[in-house]
Image 1 (cartoon, rainbow, N blue to C red):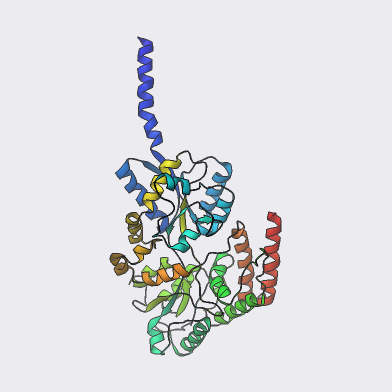
Image 2 (cartoon, rainbow, N blue to C red; image 1 turned 90 degrees about the vertical axis):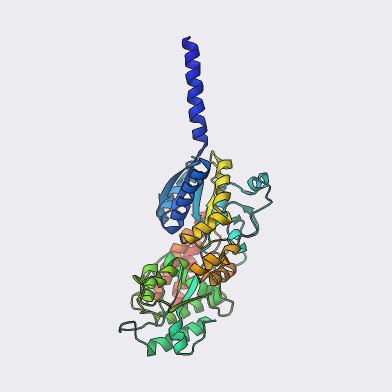
Length: 420
C-alpha cells in the first residue's frame, strides 16, 4: 500500500512539474524602448500560449557582458537573447548561436520571410550577407540626417545631397540666424566623445569620402588619403558646432536640436518622437528627416539593428524558435513599432496606421535599405573604442587629422595582432 501510494505521488509530481519546466523560456533583453517592447510581447505570448518567459533585463553594456559570459560558459542560462548587430560577428563567429535555417525548414520555410528588409537580414548572417542565418532582425534602426526645414526654406536651401551642401548650409545658417528665444545658433551639431559616439558620427562621412577601415586582405587602412580627408572635413564641420562638442554624446546633440540652438545633425530614429512633444521641443514641426549625404560615394547610414538569436546551448531550442517567429511576425512587429521601435519588415514601413503615426517612415526605409554595417570583425568593440579615442582627440585639437589617423591605424593593427 505504501509503495502504491509512493508511486502515485511520484507520477503526480512529475505530471505536474514536467510540463511546467518545458513551458518556460528565459529571454535576455536590453533596457530601453527596444527591450520594453519585447518584454510586452513576452507577456502577450504567455497569455496566448501558456508559455512563461522569464525576463533578464540589463543596460546596454551589461547586456553584452552578461551574454558573452553565458555564451562562453555554455550554461544555457538564456534561451533567447537580444543583441546589437555589431556584436553579431563575435557571437556567430565563435559558434555561440543556433543556425536557424534547419529550424525554419522544419516549419516549412526555406529561409527568412521575404518581407524582411535585405540589409536587416544581411547582418543576421555569418559571414555577412551570404552565410548561415543565426538571428532574425527585430528593430530596424539606421541613422538619419536631421535638419531645420524652416531655415532651409527661409534661405532657399535644398535638402543636403552632399556633405559640402551640409557645410555650406551650416555656414549660412550660423552667420545669419539666432537660436529660438535668442542666443547663438549653430549650423551643425555632432557628437565626438571618445569611443562609440565619435565613431558613429564619423563613419557616414568616412564612407562617403571613399574611405574604408580594412583593405581586401583585412589590413587596416583608416589612414588612407581618403580617411584623413574625411577627418579633416569632420573638423571643418566642428567649426559650426557648439563649443565642447568633442565631449558630446547623443543626449547633448538632441538637446541642441530640441532647444533650437543647432540646425543639423546625424541622429537615430529613437529621437524622432521628441520633436513633436511640446514638453521637450521648441522646434515643433520644424525638423525634417533625410537619408545621409554623400561625397565621392553615395551617402550611407550606419545600420543599428537589434537582433534576436537562440544560444547554441539553450535547452529549449524548439520552443525558443516558436517564440522568435511569433515575435518577428508582421502582426507582432507592428505592435512593437507602435511602441516606438522601427520595424525590419518592408510592409510595415508602408502601413497606413504606422505612417500616420510616424511620418518619417518612408525616409527611414530608404535609409535602412541603403545602410551598411560597421566593419564585420569580432574585435569591433575594442577597435571602435580605440578608433573613437583618436577621432575625439583630433576634434579636441590634441592631434592633427593625419596624426590621429596614423595612430589609430597602428592601434587597430595591434588589436588584430593580439587576436591572432
